[in-house]
Every structure is written in C-alpha cells, then in structure tokens.
Amino acid sequence: MLPDRWTPYVSDDGIRIGLVPRGEEFIVQRSLCFGRYGRISAFVHCKQLPDDHEFFSSVQHVELTPDTVGEFCENMLKSVSYFRSFEVCTGVTAFEKEWRRSPSSEVDLNRFKETRYEKCCRSADCVMLVKSVKIRRCHNCCKLWRILWRHDQKAASDKTPEKGMNFSKMNTPQKRKAYLREQRKSHRLHVENRRLKKKIEELVDKNGVDIDSDLSKTLSELLNKKEVLEKLTPIQAIFIQQQLKAAEAKSPYAVRWHPAIVRLALTIRMTSPKAYEELQGLLRLPSERQLHDYSHVFQAKGAPP
Ligand SMILES: [Zn+2]
Image (spheres, protein in one colour):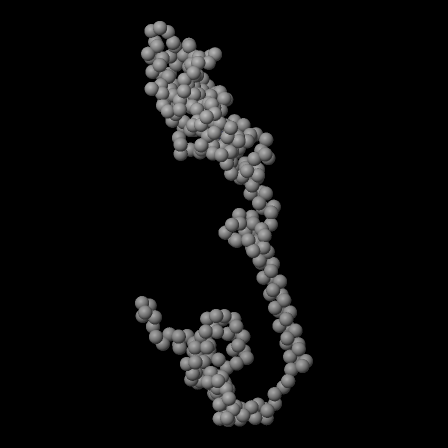
C-alpha cells in the first residue's frame, strides 16, 4: 500500500509515484519515476534531482521482467518510503529585501503548496531535499543565507537608528552609531556645563554682594530670635539652627546633627552624590564619614558582622 497522498500514474518514461498536496488542484510536489530497465529518477517541483544526490546512494535498481514483477513492486514501495524520509529544503525565508540582490539565487513563491515555508529564496544550486525534518535548508542555501545576512547587515549599518529607538531592537552597527551619538551629546553637555559654570562665576565676581561681618552678625542675631524662628516650619527652623551651630563649631566633626538633617542629607546623597558634593560647598552639612557612621548604626539584617 502506498502512503497517504502518494499517487501512482503512468508517464512516457515509466511508472511514476507522486506526492500531491491536499486540495482540489492537482500538483505533484515530488515524484519518483521507475523505468522499465530499473532506472529510478526523482523529481522535486518538476526538477530532476542529479544522480549524485544523497537519495540515490541507498536505492536499488530492479529491472521489470515477467519474473521480477513482485520484486519490482516491492522496490517501488521501499524507494517511496525512503524518499518520504527527505524533506524539502526551505531555502532562505529571512532577509526578503535582499533576495533580488543575489544573482545566484531564485525566488520560490511556493507554487507547489509546500507547508514548510510560505515563500523563500533558494540558491541556484539548491539540492531541494534535505535528510531530516530538523534540517531546514541544504548546504548551498546555507551559503546563500550567509551572503544575504551580510547584505542585510551592511544595509542596516548604512541606516542610522531613529532617535528614541529601543536599544534592544538595534543591530550591532546601529548600536555602535547610537553609542557614538550619545557620546557626542554627553561631550557637548559637558562643555556647555563648564561654560555656564564659568559664566556664573564671572557674574558672581562682577555683580555679587559681599556680606560684611556686621551684617553677618546681625543675621545670626535675627535668626536666633524666637519670634523669627516661630514663623518658620519646624524643619526650616532646625535647618537654620543647625547651620548656625555648625558655623560656630571649631571642627566639623564636633557638630551633633539633628536626625531630620541627617535623613535629609542621606536622601540627597543617595539621590545624587554629585549634587550633595556641590551643596557641601555652599552649606554646612554632615561629612561623608559622618553619614557613613549614622547610616551604619544599625547593622542590616543578614549582613555579615
Ligand atoms: Zn536548498
């Protein structure tokens, strides 16, 4: 018995057994032709396989005579069974934009209703059948895949990634371009930052107001007054008191910081170490060492002693 969808018919050159897909249209995807003198020919998509194809290495050739009818039929079934173990090469299904660019290839629009692919590009030397269902393409189509991949990479490398494009969706050349673009942007911002800092320093030198020691003293007295402090929020009052105390302290390490100030300092320090460093140049704040001591008073649960 022949397997499902394998149909025998007689042609000019012998008995043919062909595989037809499901559907109303009669298309022969692949076929074997058994000649009277024992010659076996194989066809895939109406193209004859060359005699050195892997398939022919394991088939027998049985001549048809009145004495060998049984053996001839048995050999047909065996050959069909072996032929079925091969699968059609899927060619290259990716890089569709590059298909027309390779001269040694042809586009297969799946006229023969194969189920392994919808359309593909094949090498001109495609051997059409591969030995296992796990193998997608023949060695010649693998070579074509590499050629088309290189074309695709080159085309992509020529294309600059759009701004805001997700980094994970870029290919390697695009990532390199995006990285260089970000590096240039970072450099520009760095230069701009330096220029603005210099400008601010110049403006402060030119237009800044000097606070003389008398005025400073008056400010200290004013801020120490109870009625002034009452108008401030608790955290503002604590902050100003701590600033005055720190200013009077002989050593920065001699200051006992209020927990609210420590918490504020830790929050700023954790959010932006650079901003904290800048603020330290402007205000009296706990030092890095003090913050470390405060934040390590309680050992974290599970941390090594
Ligand atoms: Zn192939």
